[in-house]
Picture: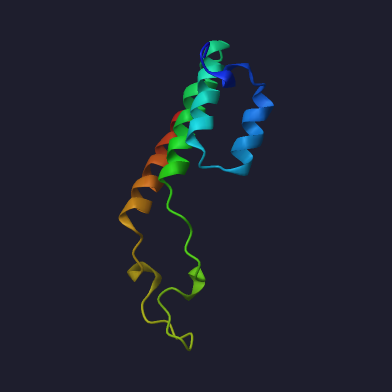
Length: 104
């Protein structure tokens, strides 16, 4: 962090930039390095891991999720069990659950 100008930023500046773009992984990683330099060991890996999971999360579909598996007229074509989730979304969900259990 001695060679990175972000090493002198207050934590609020990192939070502001991350709030503007949740997928700004470089800022998240820089913040975790600042936390490590400050001796905040528990917060740094957690923030990094959560940032990775957010980066892996696919964007939400633009269509109405309630309309999935229905015809244009709104007739249900298949039960809710028949609607399959994207494999990447399943993997992210699995790791989010594991992370939640590990952090609590």
